[in-house]
Picture 1 (tube, rainbow, N blue to C red):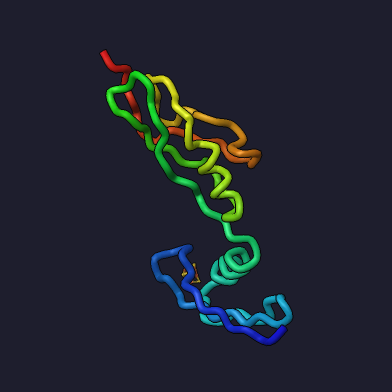
Picture 2 (picture 1 turned 135 degrees about the horizontal axis):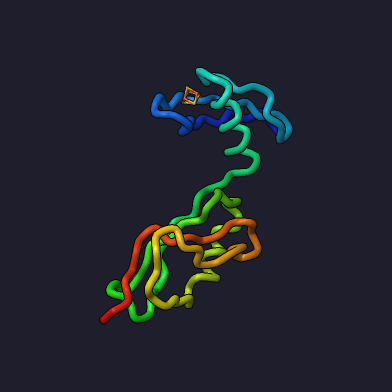
Length: 124
Ligand code: SF4
């Protein structure tokens, strides 16, 4: 496997340092451009085990709104995002729903819980 340089921007703070990551035989050998150690941590995580907070909406039954916005309470592996979204496709939850309410524990087998980020009142 040949040497490779990957460029990315650190998103850990508004400075947004441009990072240059050297990879040799699948291993990171050098990280340049980071102003602080968080940039190196970010680059390692992003290239070896990328993770994201999942945000989406799910359907609501008997609510004043037809859907509620939700997000995971921790970042999850990017590889699991599709599976998580698929598991939510036909889900419908009953109103009322409060902000911060756990909608699902261990979403698609991950350690993450899905929590509501909006309140939905019961339709009167
Ligand atoms: S490397 Fe440090 S200073 Fe630069 S964007 Fe990341 S967190 Fe901010």
